[in-house]
Image 1: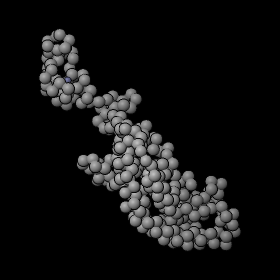
Image 2: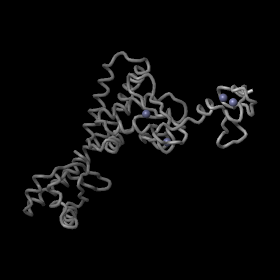
Image 3: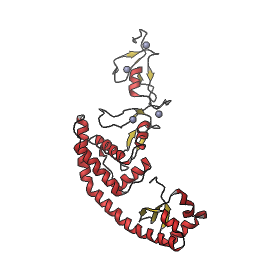
Image 4: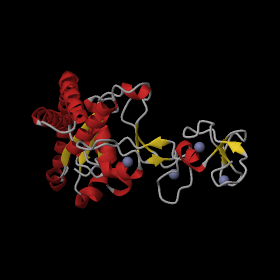
Amino acid sequence: ACRCGRQAAVWCGGGRCRAGRAWCAEHHVRHPGDPSVAYCADCYGDRFPACTEQGCTATGYLRCEYREAGEKRSCGRRVCAEHLERWSVYPASVPGLALCGRHMGLLRRQEPEALLERLLFLTEARRGRRGRAGRAALPRLRVLRHIVINTTRQVRDMETLDAMCRSVQRRWEQTRGGPPDDRRVREAGVRTLRAHAASRAEDVAAFRAEHVEGRAHYARLLAHLRATGQGELAEGIGFSDYRPRSRILFVHVPPRLRGAFIGRGGERIRELSRVTGVEVAVERGRQ
Ligand SMILES: [Zn+2]
Ligand SMILES: [Zn+2]
Ligand SMILES: [Zn+2]
Ligand SMILES: [Zn+2]
């Protein structure tokens, strides 16, 4: 008999009932892909949890991995494949961090240093897990820079990012207490940042060398502007970045000077590219 007293029709195949409890026609649900399997309402909810995004009726197969220091467990909100945000911060062979919409939004609003700290925390919290997810590792500084730009829309140079990593390391070295799992994460994070320092130094040195080359192109650009009576432009713009492989010189141009710098139909910026021998581009980041 079903719990309601009526005659039962099926055995529930779920984890709570373990095929030991039977349910009537009204009190069971068929497996969506396999009509030979049925569940009671509770077991069905365990097996096919609903997506927690508002108005979504799909099954939330994945859980949000976000966790904040001081919290005992991760967010755990169930999200369907469509509402899941994958923060792709690891190499392609390692799945990115699974996040609910709320936590991806929270990360986008962080300042760069706070973002780096959270990334390190989530990466260490994941390590030791079985399978591909456990192979998460802190990306190189040049990759971190792009993660920061893409997530927060704020541009920082390599030296600044390196200093941020050291500052997070110092803070974690000095933090005491908190839940045991947080202490484990912090200790592992400090070891990771120490081991990461050598590759950061390499990336900073490479960036400086590129900078020297970029500065030389930039100096030619300024000289040309001054020689052609465009001193106001020369005073107003600033060096931003140089990519040696693609030979692109990024220049910071305040909005009021952009029209003059680019010229009608891009005429002026093409002339500047010709004179300097590299592609001159206007930096789009906020700073
Ligand atoms: Zn059941
Ligand atoms: Zn029933
Ligand atoms: Zn959904
Ligand atoms: Zn979440």
